[in-house]
Length: 140
Ligand SMILES: CC(C)(COP(=O)(O)OP(=O)(O)OC[C@H]1O[C@@H](n2cnc3c(N)ncnc32)[C@H](O)[C@@H]1OP(=O)(O)O)[C@@H](O)C(=O)NCCC(=O)NCCS
Image (cartoon, rainbow, N blue to C red; front, side):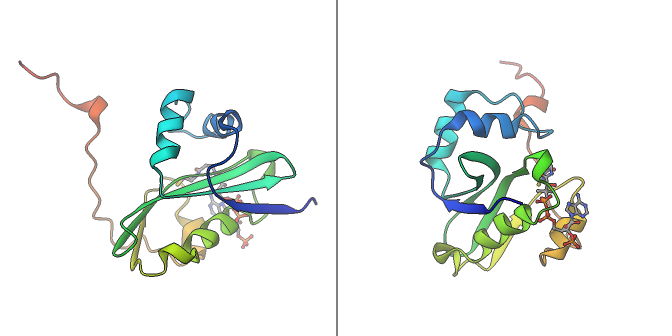
């Protein structure tokens, strides 16, 4: 198995990121332009690399004090089951700029068992979502 390295930063080609997104059930239709803006405004962006190939990602939005949310955790299919997802989450949780944060939040439909191995709890399912695409058209 090749050495996987984890990078903290945004200085990489977004084409590989878009192909990772295409493997997810939620981010497959993101455009390059919107993804550029999204990366620019993301607080912490972690990527996993096999040499020059992007094989995993995860990102954080945060106030650096009380709250952080984790989004878009994806590992390239052939690389799943090799602790890369674990490495991405641990890199986030141990990140030097996030040590004051007392609560990390994430949403997952099918991977509760994965996150439970990392200390996340699904007991407090108190989230609600406002989805722009599901709102009724405005009457004016
Ligand atoms: C979920 C995901 C990020 C996990 O990454 P990964 O690199 O495959 O996970 P790891 O190899 O670090 O797995 C760590 C442990 O969790 C387990 N695990 C991984 N995915 C799991 C899942 N979906 N359900 C249950 N257990 C899982 C592994 O078996 C492993 O346990 P072990 O150490 O006892 O063998 C990855 O499978 C993925 O990208 N899935 C598709 C995208 C997705 O749904 N992302 C989550 C959105 S929030």
